[in-house]
Length: 159
Image 1: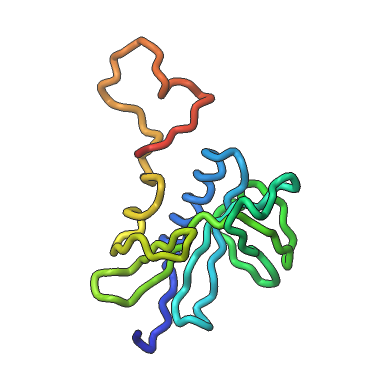
Image 2: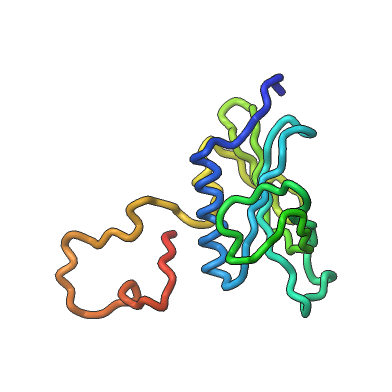
């Protein structure tokens, strides 16, 4: 590993936050994306997790603690109201760590701690395709028949 600390760019943090927000909307519960400092490891990484409900049994999940003093979150935290220093027991979904390996900037780590995807492009390992023109209407949409895409109660998810 090089001596330079690997950190997420502003655009990458924005994309991570938008992914957490999309996951929150899709799942109907808060999805937190906490960015971990590179101080100990030499690289930043982000963990995606869902706070456990009081009715959830921790034995049914891979549980991690999210938050704490100075925690750095990306996105809108699923609408969850948090104070600095709050710590939540959460279901671990996945993590993405930065890498300085040639041709690999991102490594995805699953619930078992296994590295399951390696890529140069963050979008390739996220569960949603994020584009700025996702809400643009098709230019040649002459169809007057309603469709699922016209239903305002359905989330718009691009695969």
